[in-house]
Length: 288
Figure (cartoon, rainbow, N blue to C red):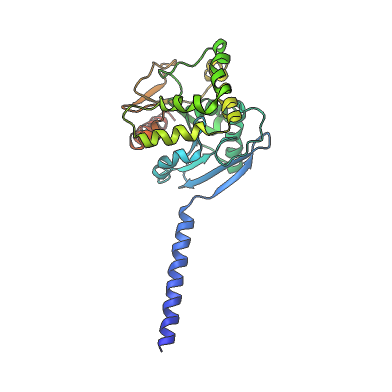
């Protein structure tokens, strides 16, 4: 009898353990890879509920898809959510000679095509903003709108094309020592210091060749292609910026300001950013 009770207890415990493991596994979104147009493997994750709208988050320079975790956790309750690592970032491949905005856009397009996505809203932070515009131009009617996060019409002065070479010199001499203080300076002064140090160090430790190429190409795109590509957009563009912002070029566009944050709005204040993003999604829904 005692032996039977022990066996029953063992089976019950094992069953509970298996259920717990299954729950844990199901709660982790499936991760996958797809080849971009030039053959680079692009790491991406799909989670959330299946409905008519997909949110695809595009991270900033030197970051990766994990930077969107507070947004994934929040918006996966109501939307299908896709995150990806652009080439040279996170777990994606890096076998690319140059890291241009056009090629980053191809990374996004590869994920959209593989997953068969329609009715996509592209949410791009910093570098992710230009990437979203170029991807939207190629994806045409599969994109419902773009939400650019602290990329356009901010107080940050993008270098003119004639200035780019000189701006890049310090990065070429010592990428870490140039990048680390630059990233630290982009936060609000009251932001948690451990967050500032973690993100600044994370970005500064990126492979210098990838960091330099992607930053220089971002500067080149802003100087040469921004106005032309933006003028071709046929979908709404909404901005979520820190309080220090400029008037958008197009009066039909809207800027949602988030107070008391720096450039890294989604990380500095996830709650405020999620509220702003929710408002942006409501505005896009009204514009359908």
